[in-house]
Length: 80
Image 1 (tube, rainbow, N blue to C red):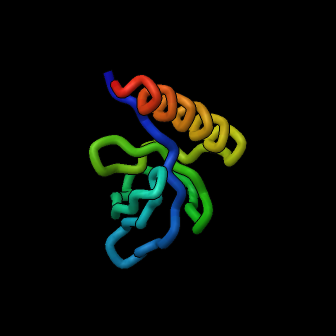
Image 2: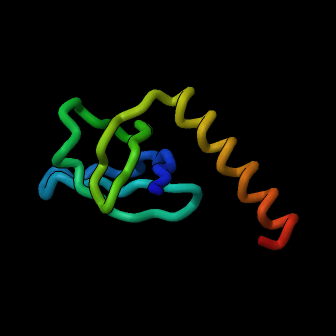
Image 3: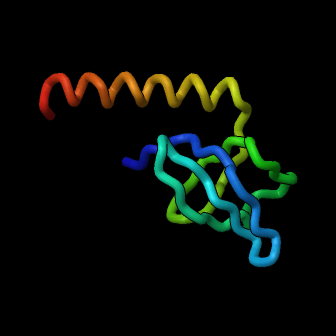
C-alpha cells in the first residue's frame, strides 16, 4: 500500500522540469513532467516515486497533513 502525503512546492526549476517540495519538513527535488496544469510556489502536489502526480487544493492538502500529524503523534505516544 502506498500513502501519498501532500507536498508543498517551495521552488520551481523550469530548466529541467522539476520542483523542490516540502513534505512535512523534509525537502526534496521531484519531477513535474506529469503535471499538465501550471505549478506555482505554494501549490500542493501528491508525489509518487519522485514524480509529482497530481496538484491538489490547499484545503484538502492541509486536512490530509493534519490527519498524518495525528497518526504520527499517536504512533509516537504508543512507541510503535
